[in-house]
Structures are given as structure tokens and as C-alpha cells.
Length: 292
Length: 292
Image (cartoon, rainbow over all chains, first blue to last red):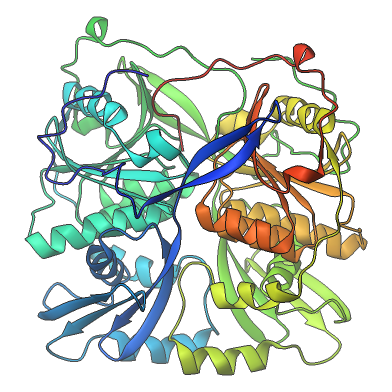
């Protein structure tokens, strides 16, 4: 494995040794020998907004308060003007209650929902698309030297992924510095935890870049845009609708970022191509199927 | 790239050349040169059960009828006794309507849902867990020689993944033969399409193996168990809850299947270790981060 980088510059870095996030399970390998495998935890967390149960998310279980806040924010159930009175996590009950000063938009949304559909499974897409028409992202430029530096650091940061696999990571970055690195079994949870942290800390999105280990689907592009972050990068690939929405809202979208290579499918005019490619180590192109 | 295998033995194989499933998008690469990237489509499909709108799924758009049937079946909204009168897909409206002879369990479920929660996002977990306590999977043995043969064939089958990336695959297999290979932007859709095909064709799950490119999360294990399939295999890793549920229902769970290597974390007593490892090519262990 490549040498791990120094993580002292992170505000929040993964904690791959946290006892509560992984479990050791005994199994057998291809020779029939007993092996101990480290696997990530996956537990329910039920999110309440004031008195109303909203959803049960499956999560590794760290930063439940950020997950709840970010989820409600990204679903449009908490507006930016809302005054948050408290966020109470109960580890035993596996619940988080977000309390606001005034009534939220939730009641209105619930009325609409029970009229138009039963209970949605998967992304509640209408809710997320709703806020999107107002979004105009700042025209922030991004240096390709920063992109390469971020990928290099993030790939070498000790993480649950490197320790146990089967987990997604999302990293909030500024310039060439990764600031907050969240992991979760669902990539939507990892990005919601970033959103919750930004909301709690009052962090401006204008000069930030979001890096995700997952694919650049419409859901990921919409969440990034709703968070006001102008640049989204990933090692993984694209969906056509993700590219369309990125163009519509003015998001710079960079995918398939591996070694020297990347493809920019939206906002390429905002790239400052200052990297000296001869100094960037390339990754060999791999044939066939990778883990998903 | 490794040489593609013959796909004539599949009942349904991916169609990587289908015009409707991918799109060519112009972007720029790391040198600033214009490049044409092939990206997968992602479109909404709204599923109705009789007169009731149930959900809008994001899908690549092939086999909408199987997706609708399999989704409703895996959510417990269609019991095995239900007589299906028709499944009508409207390409323009992006809807599928599943019609049953008698009233379905949906009304009962809806009532429960609006009482206990607003509108769920992500997996409607309660619904899926509900049917699980009755599940006892058949004590089907599996030959490791078949496992290796399946992985070899599936990894070399021409697919949207190999063509465009950013997509998951799920394959229904029997012995050493892959039968039905479905792909989709969400791995839950790919497995629901398999479930819909099985329901339509009246296929027995008892002697089948399900192969997925995705992770072995609780959702994937539960779906496989509800479909009655006794073996689930993947290149990817595990979550702790996925392992727990597999042990509970008697599912054989094999992960991290790459080259010669694999780890079996549930049901190892049902493996017949007949493969000659010296004939199985190994994959080099890779350091660092892979695409997610």
C-alpha cells in the first residue's frame, strides 16, 4: 500500500480505528482456512424534525447530528433561514431529533406528498429538483494542480475504505487542502454529513471543491449544487443526466480522475491548467471489472 | 482488455450498443483536448400499482416492466398469490402500471406508513424486513469451481459497465452458467429487474446463485433472501449487518471474489471446494483507492 499521508491538516479525518464503526467477523478463505475479516457496521438511524418522524437511514453511525441536519437541508425541509434550537442524538434509541424555532416546511411537503404519491422509495427526487431552478453557482475557477494534489492526498488518507472496504467517501476541499472527509455505507449519507457540518459551522461553499469516491449521478450533482459548491470531482464515471444538470447550474464536473487522466464534462472553461503533467505519476489502465 | 466471452448461453445479456442506454458527450481531457465520452443514461420511471402511484425510480430505462414487477415484489406489495392482469409501460409518460386482479396489500401498507412516518427516503426498510422472519432458504450447496467459472465469464461479458462505466450489474446464475445479466445505475434496480424476470417466467430460485458487482449490504442480502435465492456472491465487500442477516436466513455469502481469492462470511459449510486453485489465474492485489 502507498504510504499514508499526514492527516493533521484535516478538520475532520476518517477514524479507521474507531471500535464502533467496524466489526471483526470470522469466515473462511479460498483455501478453507479461517480468516478474520474487518467489515463496516451498518445501523439504522431515525431522523425526526420536531415531532415528526421523517426517515430511517442506514448509516455507519458516526456524526449522526451532521447526517440529520444535512439530510433535512438537502431535502429542502430546513431552509437557510430556519433557526435550529437543538439537535439531540439518542444512541440507545438510534434517533436524532432536530428542533427548530418555528414550524418548518415539512407539513406543507407532507400534504403534497400524500396527495401525489404514497411513500417514495429511493431518492425523493421532486423535493431535490424543486430548489434547483434558483441555483446559480459562483463562477469559481479551479487549478488542475490542486485537483491532482487533492486526489493524491485523499487516496492515501487512512480510512475505513482502506481498512474494511464497502464504503464511500466524500471530502470537502479548499484549494489543495482536504478539510472534512466523511465516509458512509451510502454515498448520499457521506455528502449529507458534509452538508450538516457546513450548516453547523456556517462555512461558505463558494471556494470549495467536493470530492467523492462515488459516481457522478444526478443525485450527487443535485446535492452538490444545492449545497452551493461549484466544483465536483470523482475517480468514478458519469451519468448523462448528471452532466446535463451540471451544465444547467454551472457546476464544474470532473470524473474518471486517476493518475494523470481525467475527463471534464461540464465547466471546462473554469479549469486553470497549471499542472505540469510530467510530474504527475500515472496509473496503469486496468482491463475488466473493478469492484463497485 | 481481456477477450470477451461468448454470450449466446445467456437468456438475457447486456446490450452495450443499445442507442437508448448511453449517450456520447463531448468534454475535455487532462491535456485540454476535446474528447468524446460515452456515459450511461439515467431517467425517471414512475411505478403505479393499479390506480396508486408508488415511486419514481431513477433507471437506465431498459426492461421497465421487470423493474416495476420486481420492485413491487421485493417491497412486499405484490404477494406470490397475486394474479397480475397486466403490466403497461408508456415510454412517453415514463410510467409503468402493474394491474392485479384483486386489491393488493398496498392500501394496508399506506395506512401504516402515514401513521408511523412521513415519507421515507432511501430503502423502505421496515417493509423489506417484514417478510424476512418467514424466510428459510434451501440448503443448496455450491461448487467453488462454478463460482470461479461464473466470475470469469461475467467479468468478460460485454456490458454497459465495460463500455461506459458508472453502472452496476447483477447476474442470475445456475451452476456455472450465467442466465440473466441486468445492469442499472442503482444496484437495487438491477436486482429488482432480475426479480421481475423470475416472477414473469415462474423461475425457481432454489438452485440459483446471484452475482452482484455491488457491495453485500443488508439491502442486497434482504432482497436476495426475499427472492428465495440461497447464494449471493460479489467482487465487493461486506457490511456487518449484511453478514448477520445472511447467517439468520441461511444464505451463503461470498465476497471479495477476485482471481483466486474470496472470503465466505456465511454458509461456508455449504461450499464444495472442488476447484483446483493452481488452474485459477490470480489478480494482483492493488494498493490504494479503487473507483466506487
